Length: 382
Ligand SMILES: NC(=O)c1ccc[n+]([C@@H]2O[C@H](COP(=O)([O-])OP(=O)(O)OC[C@H]3O[C@@H](n4cnc5c(N)ncnc54)[C@H](O)[C@@H]3O)[C@@H](O)[C@H]2O)c1
Image (cartoon, rainbow, N blue to C red):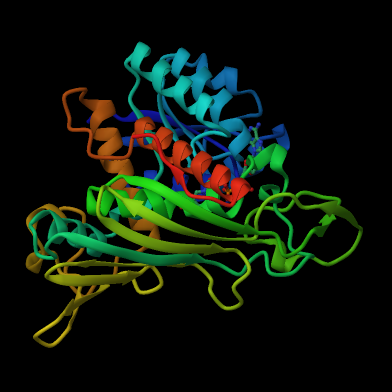
């Protein structure tokens, strides 16, 4: 079997998750890593046994043997790195949120089209098997017409003013922080599941810490808790710690969700409920193999992931039998599997999130920002 050589840009949380999970595919080899500094790249490459380590993206892009690249760097780098990779003829898998703004996202969509580049934005959370079962239940009409969606994406890792990450700096993150980081997943998910587009938003954003204490060194995602509090400098905060959004979906459905990085005890609570004219479903990422199904005139059900009992289209996203849990890592693998099937064979289906989905996400974020700023409902362009 011919192995596809790929590269990873970014040596933090996602750099590691992508490296480990892409290696679960039999036909892909991680040939290179791009770090922010030669030393960071070298350390990562040594720890992960990756042959090429560099801080120079162009070196990797010039390597004809490397066919694809994963962009796992802070948001500000997504656009220039993805664009350079597309222009160098690589397939590109970029982390979310895809870019800093709508204009950048549109340019990436156009560039990928012009170069016929295989492209993907990493909305991996769609691909838990139980979530795919919800999607098939909606598609098969089990829920009836969708009327109500609701939920949250709540975390606590930025609760204290001493918690620090690059996401707190608008120059690296973009203008929306929690909305961009995890609200982007929530909105992508609800559209993916219901097949409805978010058509209007009314958003309220809050900054609880107007100033935070920035450590003088750099801090990788989720590692701030372990840092020793010393040598901080005060940093003014201009992106939200919390957000709440009312939604219209399609022409009739309504909904609401909150996002937070300051909800003590909620580590990664990505939860949503969908209610239709016949039944409801509810799911929470913190127990991903369990799916609640709600009925009006018969007992509610809690079903456990089991591909053999799911719709076949949903079962295709489970690689292990019932009772053997599949979680966050597996959701990444499910995207990679499909993305690399397409890299290997251009006639393979595009059954993964693309730059078009990333652009849609950026349009939604822009509407959320506009609504919060105006303190009013904003229609989202179709
Ligand atoms: N899909 C998901 O579930 C998920 C989860 C977390 C983060 N993300 C996304 O992944 C991206 C990275 O987030 P993270 O949490 O891994 O951050 P992180 O801080 O842990 O890692 C970022 C890495 O990028 C490196 N870097 C910075 N500038 C660089 C450059 N110019 N060239 C090469 N490397 C550079 C940093 O040194 C660091 O190692 C973000 O866009 C984030 O939104 C996605």
